[in-house]
Length: 438
Image 1 (tube, rainbow, N blue to C red):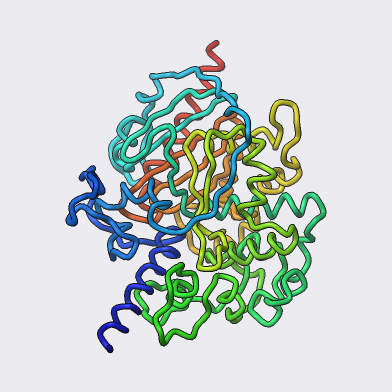
Image 2: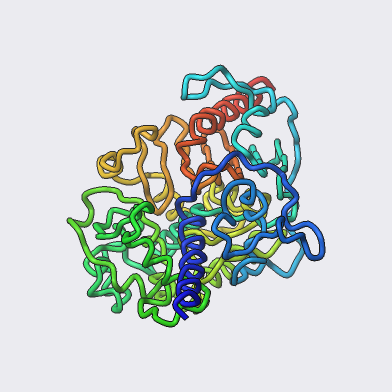
């Protein structure tokens, strides 16, 4: 009996940890993944099978299969697309982009855009310039119709929804979270403002130290598990229930602190204000109007709550359509789908001093606003970023959107930033130079 109970506890914790940590923040780094024929056959051989409860289902050479197959592994909530045909994207492919070179920031030799594709274990790369597709490439598990996990790019989608509701007057950014969601009044979120949640300047006694078995993130993982708990488990059993238990440490507004639970708190605020989950709101107001090619989806907890901090999955092209909509200040085919004021608010950026206190040395001068990363460079570039290389990069000056989906074996963006951030700028400069030459 003891062995059975221990096994059940371990399995539940493992799956829960995978759901939260691997989609939202961190995974154990393994060797560079190979295209190793996982899950091939009916059924696949046991030694080539991947299960949600596998300890390494999102690491090593399994990672590149899993990023395209979350829907087969865990429960999800759909984000429906519109009833009509997908909106066609105009194409003007430029093969010379592959030869665009740049200097990586880690001091290595110059690299080309083509070389960076493999170095960063890219699964898909799309570049839109002035609304036209000038570059499109697929690898790994990805093709034109595949739904790929975007990890913490999800946070930026949640933040965008929050900023839209603020711009529309449906939420007050100065309101206290405890007023918006009374269940959170006695938690650390209770006396934080909505703006502090949006910009992740909340002061939370919440540890994401994955090496510490007593860290709060493990409790959060158990709470968000879609699997039945072990018989002796008495803790929270949903994202919402966990958020009520978070305690405060310090003063809100003083420093940026990147914590996934801010995004899930915002997801609850959105649901309470609109009467819709983030999945249903996104479907009604964006995905059904975007001209998307496919339904998107979120992973969910045991009560069907979408994982607002890391569970979104979509196709490369549909993410490009979303990025283009944001670049175009919410306008599509002459219609204002999203309030321009919400996107302008994102582009302004947040408190640079508060961001600097978080210690992101490679992002000196950046800030964080509405769950988007704002560069404050001379192009005004801003981005949605997720672990293992997921990116929506928007450069207003170059009129360019880049979407990258990837399965880099190291989760942290610091592993790919040296060969990604300068590459994005190099392509922007190339495209602008081409415009001037015409």
